[in-house]
Image (cartoon, rainbow, N blue to C red; front, side):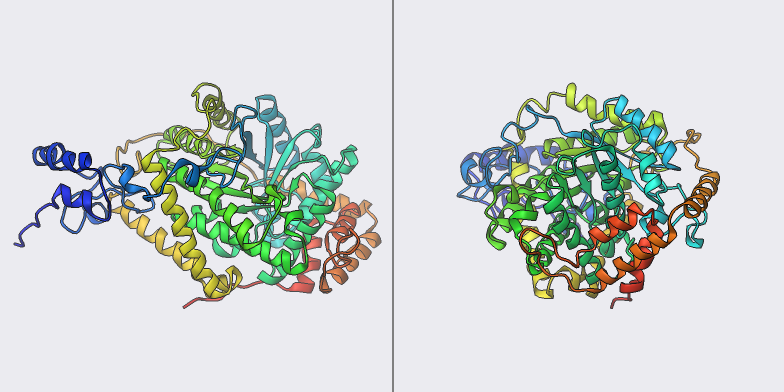
Length: 594
């Protein structure tokens, strides 16, 4: 039998890589040493693997596997650390403490509930319900056929219509979706990527027909295609061609919709795929760099499109790690926009972001436990300074949310906003040794990833090599190993398990698909199909051209957005528009990586 290694001397641990004060050294030699002698530290979960140090003593880590010290003091911060140098003030560079000088005291975050299911008619009722119960904005979830650019009557759509979101085939559906909702007064986010241009065009035409001023409408188009290749895999065209379409929306939006965010650069799906918090931060912000670089190659001015770039992060279970991630994100973006891209407009320096609680953390077992998870995750997002927030419904591990569970999720945000007191002051955890150390580590770790990605030639090249995909796959594998070994506890799933009956859930039947097919048949019978054909041919011609920078305040003549708008006004469908672009660009097939 091998002899167990002796525990590390407490003073050695305190001194390692640090310069503790004499009082901290005294505490380690006396109070701490005595406490450890009487009762050694024990892991929260199984005393194996990730929960043990090399010497066999307890090891504590974040959910991402980063080691956590038992105590953080001034010794864990740089010697030159000061509030003025590292934090600044709210509304001022480097924006660690937030982009608004008054925090939430002037305006609460937007409570934007992500919703969409079945038909546009049914989802419209849900939107009116959410707005009636206090939601400030809407976030559209589209079904899988729409996300992949297929109409509801396409063979590939069979069995999927309206199942994971709302089915939108044409302008007619978009008109129904927002019936009775004033788009000039309601901010709307749309989670759509490859077909983003087509869905945004439909939204703009609905606003136009409502009499809304495009310069006054506000909201966000997800439109982040890079994270599709990295994590979610809902892409259509090859990367370079997809990037061209994204930059078309940047150019169009900067001229015609100055209050609408033409992209939400999304780390959410990267985290849902199993990344660590640091990987989510680094890959998301680097995706942002890639978009800026492609836009500048087009000849666009960073200070014209930069203020409309927004971000979308996951808010996961590890409370302090998430807060640090959000604070570091603002500092990093400021540095990059100012120093790397030379942005002069202060609004270009601001990282504005939406957060959503972690769907991947929700359990089908004992689903009511998810209410507590969502509350903690939502609180972390607020303490991290999010501009808008979606809180998941407790039954989402089982099905799309019921009206009751969606209301409970919204009420969770309202309890945080109106009862917890956290909105009363700005960045209340600033100065915490632990939070500041985590923030610095997030920042330095992200720049280390940036160096690797720069060396590969950027994110598109890195994706083609499979680098971010491999990094995420390894992180996901290590976390799953820890869960299966019970080194990480998921309450109700791998510990504290009970026998239970499943709750009532929302069921979407096949009738939705049949009704959507009938609507499409009727639409194609009454529209001017020759006008649709001409609009699609014009779109294909523009898509085949190489766009350049617009001149004299105009957008590029090859920008696809005006042609997509013409096709939408003629009632061309999502599937037809995407098929036209497939004819020009082809479809992307992911290769195997070695």
